[in-house]
Image (cartoon, rainbow, N blue to C red; front, side, top):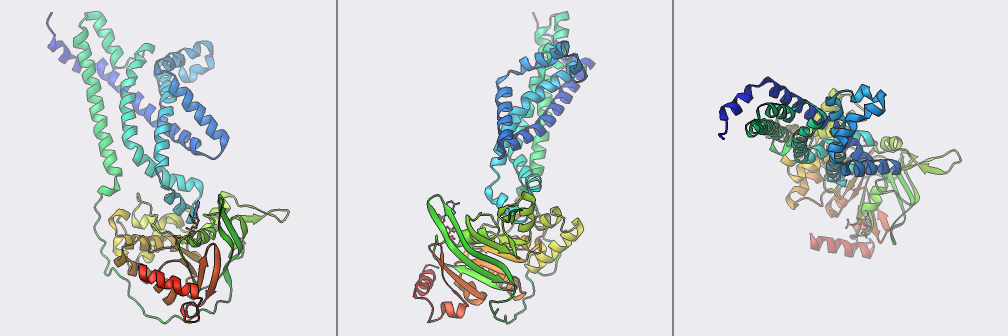
Length: 507
Ligand SMILES: Nc1ncnc2c1ncn2[C@@H]1O[C@H](COP(=O)(O)OP(=O)(O)OP(=O)(O)O)[C@@H](O)[C@H]1O
């Protein structure tokens, strides 16, 4: 028996097969899109700290990954026979197939999205928290776009699977490509010829959607974007040399920490630290590695909750609020976000949002928190970029900048919330030595402008030249505090002199 190629080719003009292809595409696109949204919700539930959400999502994923799609299809198609009201939703074979596929695929998509969510680093969460973004804003603007980009190749594969799995819907009489083919070959017995055409339809559809997936992936990949410098006259801001008057370490207290303690497991890292920072004052915290400097600065905006003592910023207890009985109770997410929005934080590793441009990184928080409208936030972001000498780089992405430039953007991003105090956690430690100076210069400028700052650093130059007050920590305690002239002078604590000599020898 001869293979009838002419018949196979004639099937590419068969309107019923094209209608079948239309059904396959509609079913696949709808199932993929809705299952994607359901998958994201399930993944967030699975990662949620609320136990009941966690358990419900876990059970769903376990159940629907265990059930074969064929069983679900037959089930969904037959439910209206025993439960007539479900006719409204499951009344047609298309709807029954759609519901069955969504239920089935959401379980797989949830795991793919969970992988994506987990791959967005803690640094991104901390940066968003420190800017005062609430849980929902942070998930929507920071985590989900990055997680989606990471998950896209797997989600694309899932689409291809769905497209092929639609052929199973032939068992519930959905006239998709395979069922149309089956009807044809039961009439003319040209089984192979018909199935060849059916296979070609699937290959064609998969190829088209694979190309679309590739296009979307490339569109979302910011590392491929090439951005020209903006036409702004100068890169570095005009430096104004000003002699900074020493702050008297008195006046209005912006930060006040009393007896702050923090223990990690068995290790008490802060052993009752006191710290005062006055308006316009620059307090620099120095000390040997492991002495608790970073932990201290992180307790000031509650990124690290302290377990004893009290931290006040602008007279408000950080992380806790007085309850009705006068005792301190933990602040809600919204209240904590509002409090943090007033405390700027610059991290050692910049923690910029890689999927947003430089301008978007800076304008995001004021816009999201409602501090400014879109236009105003962007305008202010441009002003701040000028201030840190990066006006030309507004539309670049973080990966297109040097470490020093990224840290300057991070400083501008923290300033965008107009905070009353800026916290710096070793802002130059992750930089190559030749890039340190540009960041120190920006910090010195801020000091000249009267910004209240707490800076943890190993840069003795910063402590000597910019600090009003130097705090020396060792083993979780403040050993000595005073103006730099005293701390670094010949009458300074012998332990500090040894530390300074050690740091100078190792730099
Ligand atoms: N999340 C954590 N879990 C457990 N231990 C921690 C955690 N964070 C810090 N520590 C421990 O707390 C101690 C103080 O760390 P911290 O980073 O505050 O010191 P540091 O003075 O800033 O040091 P460095 O100058 O090296 O950054 C260290 O022993 C560290 O291992």
